[in-house]
Length: 262
Image 1: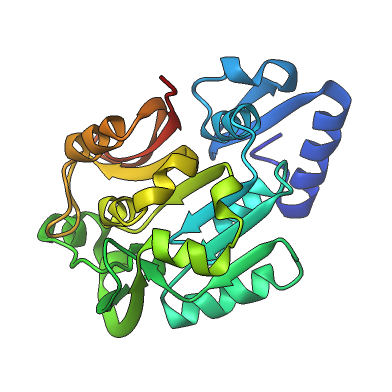
Image 2: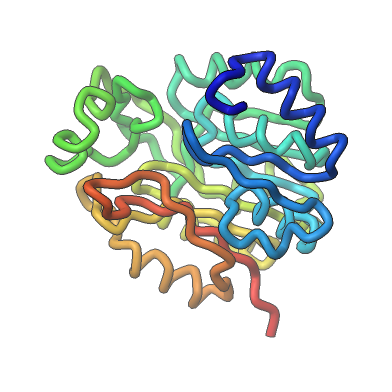
């Protein structure tokens, strides 16, 4: 079915089957998919989507902060089950325009043309041919060799960088009463964003960060450094989900963590 049906027809059949069976059909590749029992989602440890949904519900999240939102792909996935407030940050001008259009019909989705970091500043961002590789850091030789033209820097922009703690006090007056899911996808800069959370860390109940086993940007931390910092701040790993591979090796993981209460 997955290889024969195309486009809208495939999505329609998928939706009908999910409604009839009560199962979630999750695609992993062009020739593979999984059936997940919606009544026992916590058992689907292998599924990134299912683990996010399960932990959002368990953690009673009422605010999602999407840092490095690109065109809003992550939020569109969340909207299948999460109806609460979402704040997205994307600094690249051409990408932000698309993000703003995507959010325009959703009154609970707020977008800001900003980068986040460990201090308030103005910096130069490297804009790549595929904007998902755009970063405040410079791609290294391995990145350019492995990902090719996608990682090629096509231009640079000056962007405003803000600390998350200062910014949230400005744009979300009731932030101290929120239970936050902080999603980070900043191409090597996640640790700096995390440092800027400051006194808002206490409100973060769920965290997702992209960590690299093989560094792809100059000056980015090794994945063990990142995870150590997150664990020292009171988070425990829920799951590790591969983002990219190189000859069978994992290059990057999406690491999902939850607050570990004492």
